[in-house]
Image (spheres, rainbow, N blue to C red):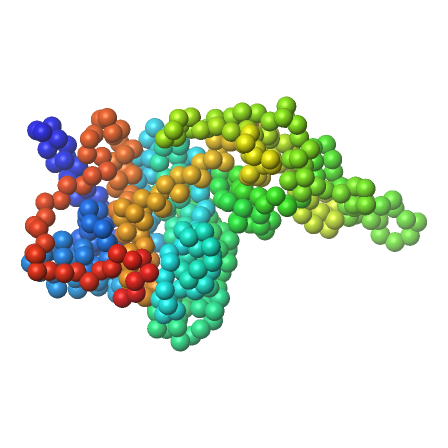
Length: 441
């Protein structure tokens, strides 16, 4: 018990130092304590991480004052989310990369079910959390990941076009004037460019097919000289190995010489699914990539050198060769996943698979951010509150990531647990916070 108390004491000291450093970007001295209290509230073992339940637990004798303080810092105070996330990255990334090199920049988006039409960004759209079209809000993020840890370092709401073009709703919910309609892919590219400009250590960009199937998205990554492993839809067309478009037509006696590549009825690219179905069992290799809860994770894969066929009939040279990676589990009749990658031609299939599969880390992050830190629990309707709440959730999560990187569970039994000595909530106090994520304040 004594050793455990010493561990907790040291951890409280590290947590205090961490919050003090974050407080330096609060931009005003009066914001430091409320910001720190909000981060503490997000780490409390309570079911609901909205303002009132946190206030009731942090200061049961002065709930009203604490409620006003927390509400102001998250919904009204004009501090910079970007500056806070940069500071979190500065503090956490060294711990993440102390033993493991940076392995990926992971692009993803996540949805938050939300009833009604008055909360900023709420609209009927695809919600990944529910796996279907539903009324929700969606945010796009970019995470830095090693093989052992990951952390979102940028985060922005996707504002649907009807919202972006509605001055009345924009004004009512405080959408900044500079925010215009952008697709999720455009938001992701702007986040990637910001990390490139800030000279963050580079790693392959990882994204699912919603981003990877966009040729323009991949082209922008190449302009930025970034490597990538991105998902593809099965209908994407490529030129199989050792096959390229037909050369330009022969030069005529007069006029400009033809320069454009050609196809004809017999010489056509294949959809990646069609190419995969031409493979035999001997072309597939059993590859394992990490340890899961049920043992080593493995499946069958094939990696082929192909050329994308996207509008190459308007080009004078074929697209460069790239890796087409496909996963075909033994129990399935056809491949279940496809990836396209511009990683080195000499890379091993094991390394290629491990990089493609690293996207699971962001799923783990969002699971913890939502279930343990209340990422989706903010009940306000405005733009600033939505982003401030998410930023402070990521800041609190960043400390947990740091602790896990510094100590293994065997070395530190309190890693990931912050011991707060808080008074009990008075029996007569009943917080208004709802356990439903679609509750609107």
